[in-house]
Amino acid sequence: MKILVLNGPNLNMLGMREEDIYGSETLDDVKMKLRDRAKDLDCYISFYQSNAEHELIDAIHSALKNNIDAIIFNPAAYTHTSVALRDAILAVKIPFFEVHISDINAREDFRKKSYFSDIAKKVFSGFGTNGYILALEEAIKNK
Ligand code: DQA
Image (tube, rainbow, N blue to C red):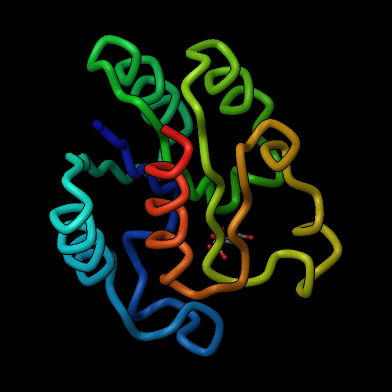
């Protein structure tokens, strides 16, 4: 099974960004944890992070060509704004799992709106970086 883990804007700053909300692990720490778990579960993962909406759209389109079976996506701030990224996910029809480190429903009102939750196979919000691991396990279960 091939899984793409996609991260949106400012997630490259994990570990030094609002640590009270997002914790002290870096994106590389998260990558390592996911790689370890993926090895146990016998699946292949690729990672991509971008601060640019069009690059994330291109990565989703490329997932089709690369025979990706599932996408684990933290769209970050684009969660609350991007019809274009939603449309990209719908266009490729690859099962997708939405992850948020913080609980988006327990923060500012503008974070309560997600353009992705109704099209996600499952949403993991508020489990810290463990949400990525939970999403990986769920993606494999859903295979
Ligand atoms: C986030 C929540 C978003 O509201 C925010 O813009 C992010 C990160 C999270 O992982 O909790 O950048 O997606």
